[in-house]
Length: 145
Image 1 (cartoon, helix red, strand yellow):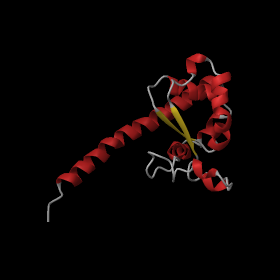
Image 2: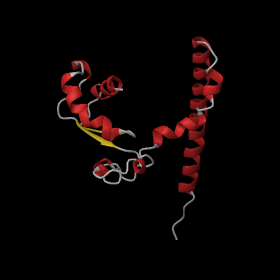
Image 3: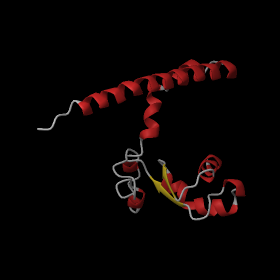
C-alpha cells in the first residue's frame, strides 16, 4: 500500500492530500518515519505536501477510542459533508465476480474482469448523458414566480 500511495501522490503537484481509509489512524501513525527512512526517493511526496488521514464515517463508530475525533470527516478541513465511503460503494456490483472467477485460470479470469468492468463503465457513461439531459430539461423548464 505504501508504494501505491507514494506513487500516486508523487506524480501530482498537490499541496494537500486527504486519505480516506478505514484504518488511517493506525497506518498514519508511522507514515512520516517510513517515508523518511524506507521509501525510495522517486515515490516520496514533494516538499510541502500536507497529508491528512480521515476515517470514513461508516467505519468511524467501530473505533470507539478517545482521541479519534481528529480523524473524523466531521471535523476535516475542506471536505464539506463528504462521508469518505464512495470508493467502497461500487464493490456491491462486483462482489459476485468472485464466484465466477475463483475456479478460472489467470487468462480467463482477466478476460472476465475486463469484460465486466468494460460493461460497467459503458453503462455508467451511457447513463451520464441521460442524467445531464434531465438536468438541462429541469433547469430550462424553471419559470420565475
